[in-house]
Length: 65
Image (cartoon, helix red, strand yellow):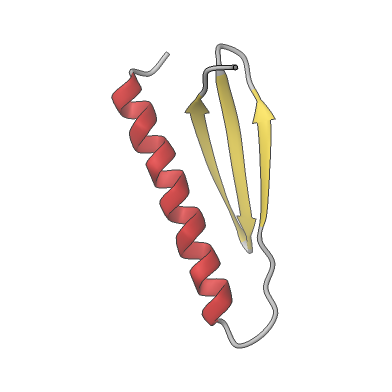
């Protein structure tokens, strides 16, 4: 399992990408869509897929509860 520092960087990268894509959609002169899918993986991890024309995939650690 990755250390917490690596997990924190991945989580921050995910949030930064999501914010950046939303800002792009708002500024875009036309239609756009953004979807986020979260899947539960084994070993206390989740896969987050951001789809906005391209797909961006992140695996992050999580603690249930």
